[in-house]
Length: 127
Image 1 (spheres, one colour):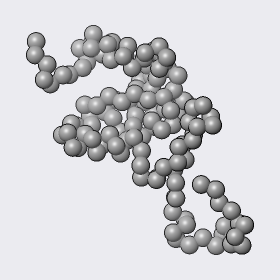
Image 2 (tube, one colour; image 1 turned 90 degrees about the vertical axis):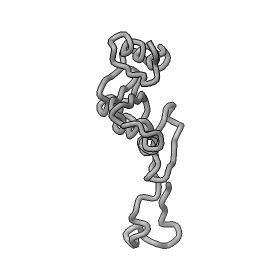
Image 3 (cartoon, helix red, strand yellow; image 1 turned 30 degrees about the vertical axis):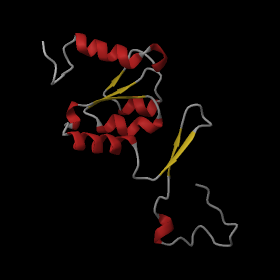
Image 4 (spheres, helix red, strand yellow; image 1 turned 60 degrees about the horizontal axis):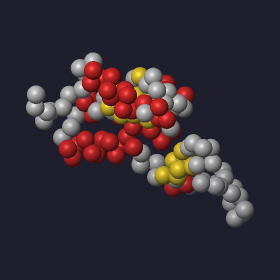
């Protein structure tokens, strides 16, 4: 969203409608990648809606992420894991930072570690 005074109005002449956040801008990786979204749209809200529709408690969900667009996703899940190569803000919000990066198959390796430790629950699994 780019604001300008070229149309003859000053940025101090804002009404209530223009004072609301018009877009949520997320810087991506590589740095030239940018997402522009409605401020109410993010992966965290999508996760909440999915879990509600499937009757899955958010506390039982693991989310993995590495970029700014994963921040709400990590925060919404019961357990948020930042990848080793994640941006600092994602690492700070996560419950855990993975030992591996995306390029090192970090999601799979972390899930395998959880399974080995007996931390994963598969409700329809037969033994």
